[in-house]
Image 1 (cartoon, rainbow, N blue to C red):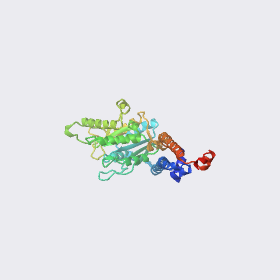
Image 2: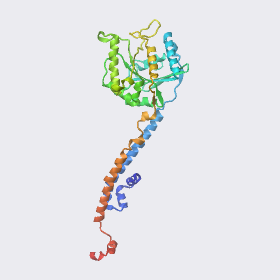
Image 3: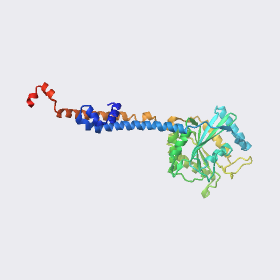
Image 4: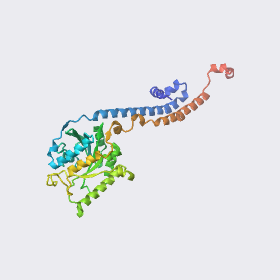
Length: 375
């Protein structure tokens, strides 16, 4: 039965439709059965229409405007040795024809994401304070130097009330529409001694939002690295245990199989953003293991860009998921089968029964030569 006929039946009323079709005794059947089918069709159509409306309104609302690109003057604030290393790494990227680099910084709230952004840029470009709540929306900082543009996107924390904040993830995805993620920095604290199911849920949410492949472009960043390990552990041993525990959760949350480990070599970088970080003779910030961490982080980012994996394009399909036009198509065969076996067959039987029980008109009896028998 055609969909538009069902809508018409629903509009005029199934009972009246039964009368118009010439089957007064089947009006109740039509009222019950056809009304149900028409309602199902209409509800599916309305739901699909609402999906289109929501997608279009969200796209208009969260489409990211072009960002102001400023001169990267903060790089001049680094010690000479750090500047030399950074310019060397930027030159390497340009040799590989990489003129723009976009870094997504994400993780739980209060782990040092914004402070890490400020440290990388060499300037206070985003608000970062232990006594202030995080921004509720992503912020992209763009800096240009010698023909190279660095984009760093700071994001709100992914945890709200002990659960993954789906709304924050949705805002981040809308913000990133039509942008390419070259590197993902997943930030956590080195001094967070335990990992739990919530960590796995965060990793899973990131993987579900941007695809499992994003971890081929991922770096685990552990902040607050200027610490004394508990229980008299050696610093390197403590870092190894903490890193292994977190990487295990990343592999579980991203569903990285053992045979895929070679393709998902996720590096771990230590960071200390506070002013109490030790420095070497050249004035560079160093960790307890003696590594100057800013050049080391940029070196790791450069290696990720050069590892042969593809950057992640955040397009409309990634944000919205499956095409709404395709979403309910698998219902069509079921509805057709239901209409035929549950509606058409039922109506046919009702029509036959109706015809058998209906008194024939006098003119028809007269034509059959049976009229005299009734009188």
